Amino acid sequence: MSTVLLENDRMRVVVEAGYGARVTSLFDKLGGREWIAQGRPSPNTGEDADYGAGEAVGWDECFPTVTPWDASHTAWGRKLRDHGDLWGRPFTVEEQTPTALRLSYADPQFRFSRELRLDGASLIARYRVENRADTSLPYLWALHGLLAVTDADSIELPEVETVSATYLSLGDTFLSVPELAWSKPNGVLPFTLDKVQPASSIFAGKFYAGVPSRTARVGHAGQWLELAWDSAIDQLGVWLTYGGWPGPGGHHEIALEPTNAAADTLGEAIDAGAKPLAPGERRDWRVTLSLTS
Image (cartoon, rainbow, N blue to C red; front, top):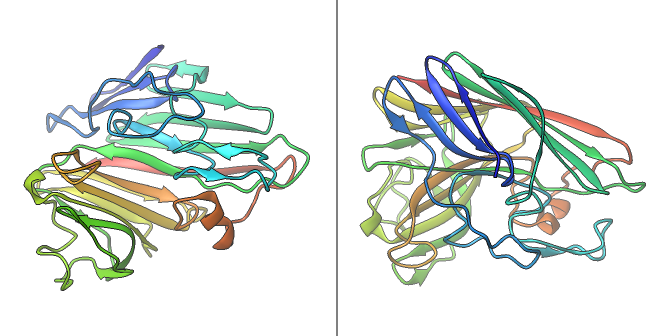
């Protein structure tokens, strides 16, 4: 793998260009905190690969689906791999400086590129996806950044009162509750969703929300990581696992996932009206991650 280091006075970022451009470290040099969930890269990257416990670390990009989906009847013409085409695949380094990195992944149907640039206490991620096919190409994208959290942390979604739930488990029980309060008692769980819970909770959940401010943050006084995204991004996905996934005793981490649709599969994104890429079309968007106190 090709390891690339970006660094300034405030933060250090490590990217594995040869492994899906995975961000394996986002380190706050002032606060001494590593924000990225750690783990070794999995060799399990084939077309039939599952994105399981061994793969669920770091910051990957999900495209053109999150959950695997049979897209044979669409312009993709094939089954789409779990968590998409990009993770674990070699990216090409197009530009590199001590504080910036632009990489891309090219396929006969699409080209996906991401530029990371340090600016003080912020990491700016600029994205571009291009349709190289001669037909419209539907897609689902999500920033799949798994974050290391502590029991002292909170998750703030400004102005969000309720979230939709697509996956919910507590202990050995799967729950079917379409909507839950975010920061108030919800009548279903023994805690509010905005407070990070210990791994002993044996809980996991996937949620979606439209956040009016297009910002979200996680942390506690003196140590916050804030995400901000532009108007091209419609939704925020939130993944929480406190010892509950892939089973009891599993991972303790969260993800704040800006996405173009409140969907886990490309099929759900199509049904939700996600705008496809026209032949030859390019689409750009930006996400900024900032360290604040």
